[in-house]
Amino acid sequence: MEHKGISLRPFIGAKDFEVSRSFYSDLGFEEIVISHNMSVFRSGTLSFYLQNYYVKEWIDNTMLFMEVDDVDRFWTELLSLNLPEKYENVKYTPVKTLPWGKECFVHDPSGILWHFGEFVK
Image (cartoon, rainbow, N blue to C red; front, top):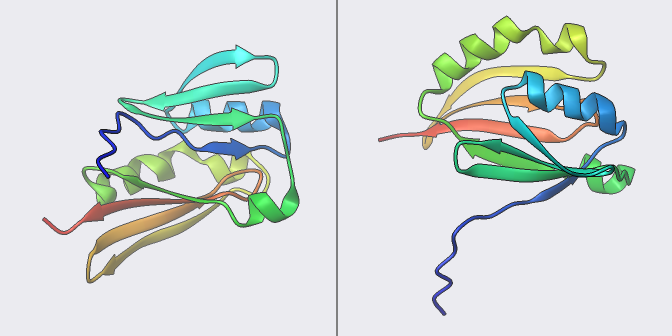
């Protein structure tokens, strides 16, 4: 089967929609409001939908991986944002080097775990 996909846009939830909207804007994503309870957030050609919907079991099991061109640069820029000081429940895990590349982690205000990684070239 040949998909010929153009993009992949996951849907994620938010415990507090307004807080999450602010968080993702601060993280560098561009917001496009779709409705009073949904926005799409974009970084270049990558996008995801944020919805004003929360189920703890779903959020606690949501992980997203975003490949970046330079995870060390990303980490340095991430630290300068001071997001854990600004948003409750936001946590960082420093860059780790693994056999396949490097990655760092960010928990968003709702608890969604983001992996930001760079593959070995």
